[in-house]
Image (cartoon, rainbow, N blue to C red; front, side):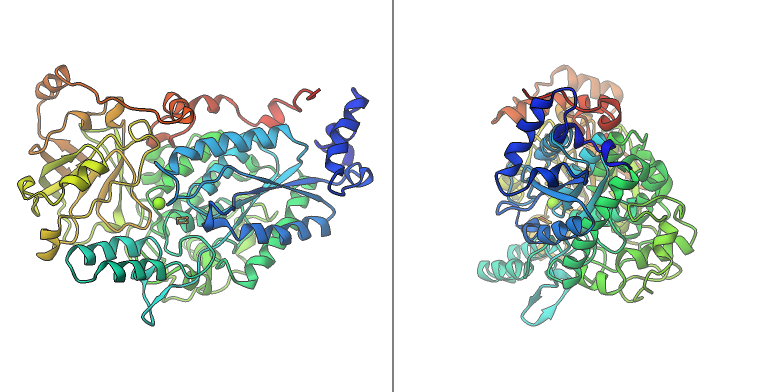
Length: 584
Ligand code: FES
Ligand code: MG
């Protein structure tokens, strides 16, 4: 591409309004850039910085950005780093999911409104990856993902065990604490031991799942996702990513040329083979919609249901992210899937090569961690997309369906109005919770919570734990942590707060779960359901911030990605809207 065609030239050489050129240039000079540099026709590459003290999972991106800058400079570009609204999964109340669309919105505005020709998206913690990819899809400037990588393995009392993987350790140690097998100090020690270095969660939770999926989509350099955060290789790929970003601008290779339907089908296959977090379909469907690709929740079952789980990584398996990297990472996994005929090898990627081209020199997989296709960890890794008279769609991870999980079973519903109600009452003997129960939680979806909280993975009462019952089926209109290992029916859409039938469920109702038919039904007649609606009073939903009110007024349901719905009419801004008006 000729320098004159660069988008940033509209700022640095404003032909129609020459005085504005001076106004745009002068402030970028105040930290030492020169007019000659900015006007040299070199691509201006943004570095969308998601790391900060508030986002410890991504904080090392502050240092990695120096290597990204080196790569951009060495390849003839000029880096301009800027912050992305902080998105940290465990620290943000009431939930980081509320802020995914806010970070998306902010990044769209930055990419559209500043003199940028391309962007490096720094990703890591759960919501950072989808927020960045959603914005890149909307604006459609050349973009490349640099993930931050997982923390190294955690050790506790000399043992590396999957149970000490970040996130997962919480659920497992809570059970031990509840039964008195460990005390609070030991509980705290275990949880803290799971976070031994910089980086994001080291289990196959939402962070590692989403970054593996970003690589499978073709949006990062091959091999990027699994490199542990502190490894030398991580800083090297930061440099290579910076270099490549400049070429993407020169080649005008945009996110929409990479994130096609075929790329999304590849992403679903990889998500299934890693037994990805149940948050992944929400985020991937959102990215697809912003990219103008008509992906639906049903596509997850169509494409992914019969894909075997190959990665022996927690919570489905026994290893962690560092082991996954040493076993060959996403390229070794994708190589097996390609050889098995499960991937579109011709999909284009940001490397400039196709998927098959990237994988030609993929390392061989260590079969202990990445199983051969013919000898999987589990025969089916995809999602079951459920329907029934309580919701239009909900998802269930097939990898949690152990052999003793009944194909058809009726349960007694025990209904909670949110996590506060659950914590207050779960150990009340009067609830009569036993092995025949399903724990239900409602008003925890995008509008109910607001933001849709990871609260569906409810622990069983301590009394049941002591009897050896470690999990019960759960059902809800919220989400569950990607590191959870419970058999849960999640993301029920529509949620109770917008008229889903979960709202009229009562404790004591019978619920039939039919895995074969992929149905969940409350055993009530249509007349009984209608009668309950006739006397229904919706709970008051309080907004605590202005964004919560805006979010509730604009968000869609989880099955279609929980998107800011009005944003879907803004597609491919770089090519449909052109350069914004002058600022003065
Ligand atoms: Fe940030 Fe898990 S909490 S990656
Ligand atoms: Mg989470």
